[in-house]
Amino acid sequence: MEFESEDAAKIFYDEYARRVGFVMRVMSCRRSERDGRILARRLGCNKEGHCVSIRGKFGPIRKPRPSTREGCKAMIHIKFDKSGKWVITRFVKDHNHPLVVSAREARQTMDEKDKQIQELTAELRNKKRLCAAYKEQLTAFMKIVEEHGHQLSNKVQNVVNNLKEYESIEMELLQHR
Image 1 (tube, rainbow, N blue to C red):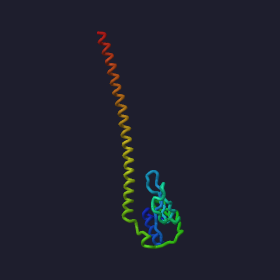
Image 2: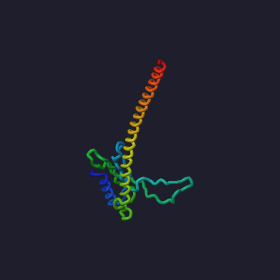
Image 3: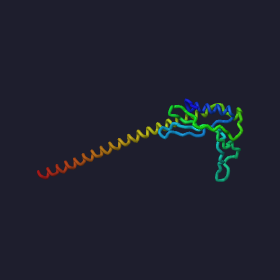
Image 4: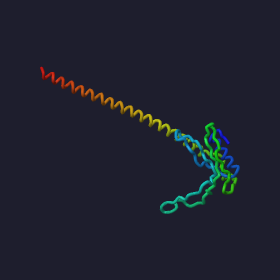
């Protein structure tokens, strides 16, 4: 299957998950090393993996609670294609747990907090790129200033040397009079 955007693929899989009876979770992504844009994404069941208990030096940090993870392998892998579309490259249909369609467990769509987090994350990514560009420009500017400083220093040294030479010539002329 092909989608016009990553969000369209997420919406499709989320709708499919609700109809089938599980909750969709965004699991991982692969980004471009050049510009940081997302090239591939893995979406799956919220019961994927196993819960690892977090323990401190002196025992459990939190009150233990039952894990919702069951090692489920159901997922889709979508990839940004050369055609400019998002394509499903892998689909695992089978779940290792019972599927239940309930209003409480199956979320509707991305709620406002999730949207805000996504928007702020995108804004932060843009600000980081902007900072990197400013840093690059500042470094280039500092290099130019440093080069001009060296050139100015050489010119001042030449003037000092010429003055010393002039003074020695002047002293010789005064002694010969």
